Figure 1: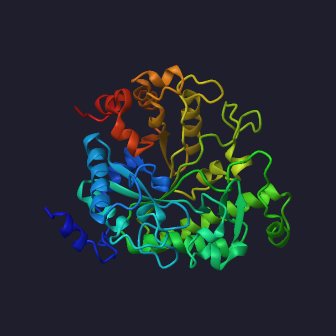
Figure 2: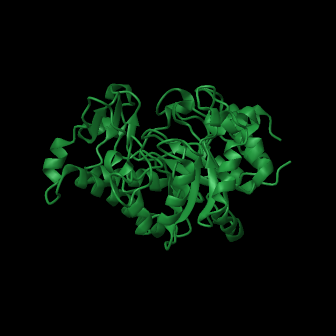
Length: 401
């Protein structure tokens, strides 16, 4: 094993590590039919790196520890956030190095996190899904706090401040093309197993605030019945175009999306779920997640069903069969996003104080053959294993222990 100095020297020149041939079909098939996933969030250092400014050797060591832990818990997939906020965890020609590595946006961390993650994950039999956020630019609203070469500063007309954050405007065709180029650079250069998006499209509504895309709508929205319909079309185009481009670059790389768990409530739409959720992705985020499945634009969907069995208004036991019906008759795989972070949290309901709640989720999902696996949010909660909830899942369902 290399000492700390040796690790830094070995990683000093960023490059497309892990860019060799695709991983074996056997592992891909196994994972595709039984995903046991874990998200590793980098935005705001939620999971990794634990803090900014660590040495390259320490950052790498922490990342390897997450991968080793995934293996110990019987997991087979890691979903690593590599573009948290219009930045990059690889040497991108399009966007700056992420501030969550060094504390300074644009500063070279001295190694290639994505390349290393791909290699080390595959060495452990893990799939590596590269997780991108398409439109979030910054978790603050002052463009001057971005590095001077940031695309959002070079093209200030691309940016909309909203809810204390900066976003790229999804209605601009040039933005849609740029964010695809930025994300697909990683597909071209690395042997990732999948492109993964989470639940952020148009931003979640903020009371009393308006996402100001009126000028963009006036310029590009002719022919649509409403601004909402136009916005949904913008996101539809992003999804479909990205899907097509991934297949052109590397046909074996999958495309998965993990949306908020409610498409629409049944009271809003007869096709909706038997829920009373305060957010509906179709109406509030302008993301027609059901359509993407029915049209076959994506390879998998992993709805975030972050509710307990029997929860009023959004019952896990009712949402699993609804999503199973959505994927029925399609080639889209269904995985369920699980709220491991709620287990043992004293702020959560009594259900989440029961160490068996998550294990019960997997038992229930086994009744629906369409469910091909689960992903747990997130890595630090796997590490903490509060009340032994993750250990219980591993023992009951993954043959660990």
